[in-house]
Image (tube, rainbow, N blue to C red; front, side, top):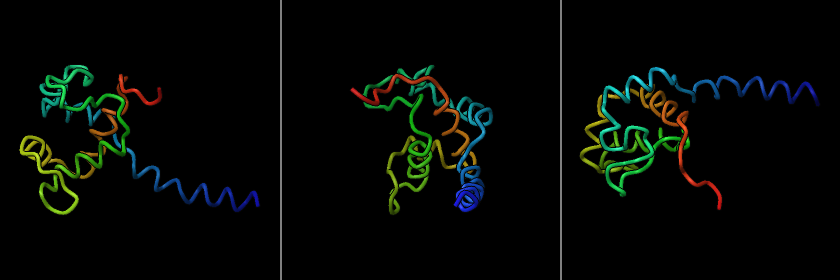
Length: 113
C-alpha cells in the first residue's frame, strides 16, 4: 500500500510543476503592463471599487480570469476591452507567471468571517 501511495504522489509531481509560474517573471510582466495603474500600487487598492483586488488572490483563479480575458467574447471568455488589450500579447506561461506573482503578494481579501 505504501508503494502505491508513493507511486501516485510521484506521478502527480509533473502536473503540479506545470501548473506553477515564475514569480520574478510575473512581477516584471505586471510592472511592464502597468497593472498597478488600475489595481493599485499594492494590488489591494484599486482606483475604482468595481475593479478587483489582485494581491493574494488564488493563483488558479487569476490564471483562469486572464485566460478568459484573452479569449474575449468567444466561448467561456470575458468581454472587457481594457483587460482584453492588456492580455493579448501574453503567452500561457506569461499568464501563469503573472498569476503566481499576484498570488504571492500579501492580500486583504476576506476568506472566512
